[in-house]
Image 1 (cartoon, one colour):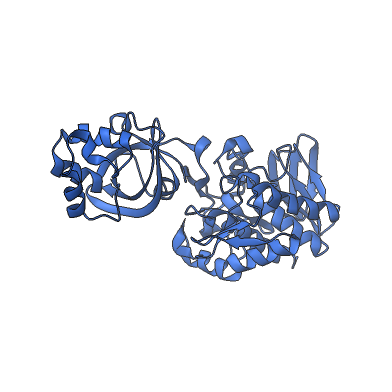
Image 2: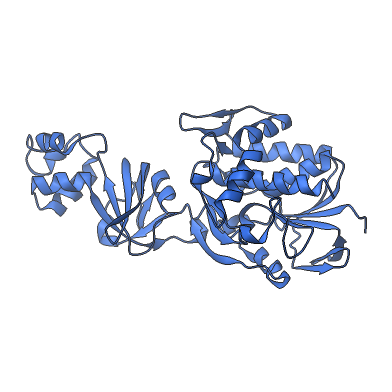
Length: 383
């Protein structure tokens, strides 16, 4: 075993960035990916358009057990550094009006191709369809087992992802590698996911999309408030605003939708008075949604106006990891150093969704993948 031989476990965003940085610096690495292709989840990010980061970067957009450590990490490698690094590989990356940064070509798979091209140039030792089933601490490093046998490495970067989107190969099985080493795995739950709601609250509204202010209430107390796209589905709510709120919502909460956030209630009432029956809602909301609300209000226009400013939907849960974009939980930051090295197993590093960090919708989770990979690779370069 070479004393500088590093195993990178996981060929997603974090593993790819770390592998490229280590190889560019002359380190000897082997990249293990359980799937048949590198970067499958990265190639689907941002609805396939590649939302790599957000200019409005800050720890307030994340959920973790150590916000201070996270804030320091983002100061070391944030949005500007991510854009600069990606552009060294090729391409141009530009923000939209909300600060979400995409490749100019708006194609997520092209970002993966940038990494693949650089790894090819660097003659990387890549093991596809190679799942690591065991990771054991030894005197001079780690013994790593796959179906092909056991290999030994001086250091390991574990960037194998969480449980979200298992169709991309991230089913949470990698957490079984760290429990025998003494690490805690905080409870895992899906975030940035569709909300399941009471069927009676959304029946007949499937496919209707609105711009709304979405407020999550728990026992009458406001938990969060976001504005954006809300899509009614067969089982509940989807859309950008829903994904952001899903990080806060729990079963039993009430989602209150302001369907006309830019229109005061008095103006709504004035418009309603000009029509009869469900036609009073013409040009106020989608006709199908209008008929639903009119029936719910029993024709009472004051009640109808109240529903337009606060349509209640009861949360029953989420659609689960199969539909989630990210994972909450994992190895707590309290068990790693500033460089994301294990406090329990020296020379073992973590990146991405393996750690208890999840961000809001809008490029924040991919930024964490890149930030954590940068911190870990910086430390690995010093070994």
